[in-house]
Amino acid sequence: MRKHLRIAVLDLYNNVANIGLDSIVKQCHGITKKFPEVTVDVNVFPLRSSGERPIYENHDVFISSGGPGDPHSHNGESWETDLFELVGSVLDHNNHCDKADRKFMLFICHSFQLICRHYGFVEVTAREKPSFGIYPAHKTENGVTDPLFEGLDETFTVGDFRWWQVVNPNYDRIEKVGAKVILMEKERPHVTHPQAIMGIRLSNEVVGVQFHPEAEPETMLEHFLSPHMKETVVRDLGPNKYERMITKLRYADDLKHTHDTVIPNFLSRAIRA
View 1 (cartoon, rainbow, N blue to C red):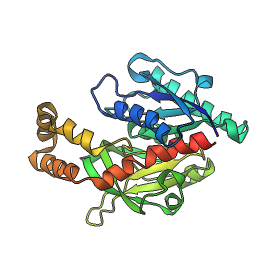
View 2 (view 1 turned 180 degrees about the horizontal axis):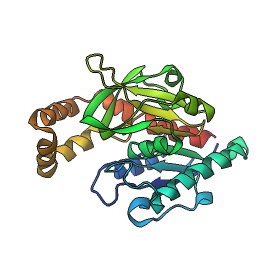
View 3 (view 1 turned 180 degrees about the vertical axis):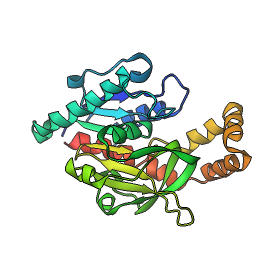
């Protein structure tokens, strides 16, 4: 078991105000409550805004955040190339090292879309309407046994905030590299739009999710009750959408369970490696 965990958090928010980064860092430090014998170092790298990237050899775990904007718009930019090179280095390292030395990586939301686009697993398209709030997600057959979701029901609640979606999987491509689809968005039999993919595992140590596992109800409620965020959400999505989200956040024990499960599961595996 690792006694010292070195974590690099890749910030893709591009200087846009958010609550995701602080929550990710808080959860990284919080894993010591479960493993008091382990020390944790967390460093945040503003990769997208300043190009600052972690030294690969100096970290055991990498968590790449969500972020704003069109996941196609920065194709070929240097920071995106650096992200893909880092992913390739982690996968290559893990294929040529002892099990105890393997590195772990988690992609969240915008990062997940970028990785899926990079590997050609799917189509990444704009949604007709934003998915913005708290929704159910469904484990696939592979997801039922995936260690990232251990302790969660087959259908569980996620914080989902996106204007883009990952759809139409190329299963030949996915299977060729040994990846697996592990989570799908809520079923919508009344619409003709394709069901979006919410999670893909690239390897035993590398996994990505579309939703925000760091989403914590109390912090989110405080965030969205602020006058600025209320004005923004009402302007972009309408008052009914805003009120439904606020109501769900007031009674979101199921979302808290997801928050308390997914990232801790990911970090626990890295520690036990």
